[in-house]
Length: 396
Image (cartoon, rainbow, N blue to C red; front, side):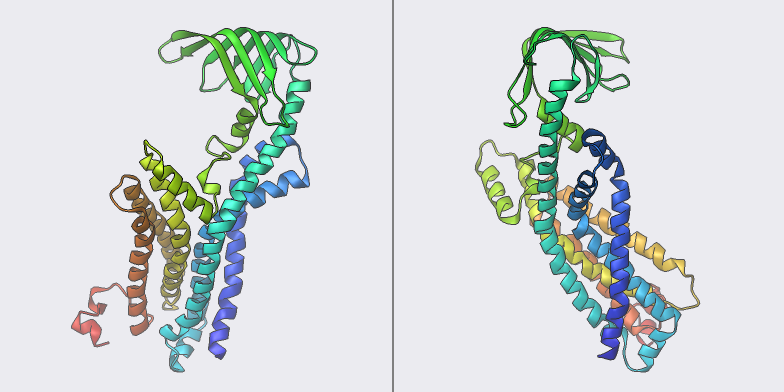
């Protein structure tokens, strides 16, 4: 039991450190997104920390297996470098016994990953949407009431350049309106309308701008040609435009990725019973449902592979384990995305697309573990002469 708890004491701190490092990298990668929120809503503790929490939480189920891989690899690498693993073997404590605390910790982390993926991930997405929606109401209301002025070109009005020759005192009626993308945008069009109106309120969530009897001019820079489209009425959801500018067009109140397991099941049943059926959407939703449960179990594959990479000959190159760990992460991700691609094209059921990569990868890791357990640390596990079906390798 002493060695059991000793291994746990070595792996746990490494896991926590690796998880914090991955969270820091994720936060850095989201700084551009945070900057957009701060520019739109202003700098405050709430505007800084709350979006970061909501963005980081959905990635916890993916970060746990990666952090566990590096934790196990670093712990067993230190055992090998300090000669402690040789002491384990001398005391009759082979790799298969050293794997017991790692397997128990992996089981705990897999359960935590399932809970995080099934509940924390959709909660984080829902709260991010709610946070942006609540903030948007105030910002758009202030923009409509105070930012746009008659006879003034307003830049960055919900991502567009806006102009109105006159605006009524109650801010509800507009005349001679122009709306166009900012300079440098990939879009190239201009909307002109003699009349416009702003209806609804931000508090009720139905704030909209309508343009009447206008024309939309578009031009293709490559072909130097243009077109004109006349319309009787064009309506813009101002709140939606602002939200999409900040959060992206794929983030909305009806995003199935923000649904908890029970609600996601109901959503799948609902879209499966509606005609015409959207088979692509059904597959994506079913894959997400099963993958939230299956993905955390990759912690077993990464844990086993971390032991195999960590137990090496102290005289070998130190960077091999890190290269192998990075290769395992990239290879595992590509492998899982390959099965997802097969599911989206209907070549394999979403359930098997979610589970098969983990079963295959764990089988491969289990074989490497079997090899590492029966061979001396200095022997390569994939050398042909060391294969179990080879008599020469089997005699060692």
